[in-house]
Image (cartoon, rainbow, N blue to C red; front, side):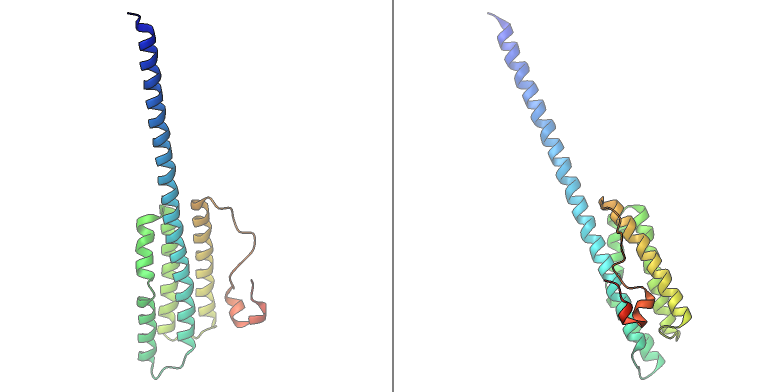
Length: 175
């Protein structure tokens, strides 16, 4: 019996099986990476949205008249707690790479200082308030830059959200 054709067939089958397994593994790795990226995108979107809404809520509550300083403080604390920023922050700690986590934590603490400032009686638009918002803006810009890098998205070339100055001058708002 001639073993060469049988050996050739077995070798070809083994190569085909190995090639199929390698292709399946590569396809699985690609799908896994794609799913991880989608999960990070969802987490980043939730966090940045929560940050934006919380900031707007804190500013609105600080501008509003309250029966007492204690009621104002309570409203601000409840808004911070109920905003979902804690849950969003925990998701960041679980999903994001370390540079993004550190940047998002910095934004969280900026918002905490803004809230605490309003609780302590800082007036909206005062120099202290503007400084806190400027710090939050810089921290948020750094965070978004790191998020975009992590997702493989290029940098933004124009500003899309208003700076502190834009809140006091609605005609000067960016797009």
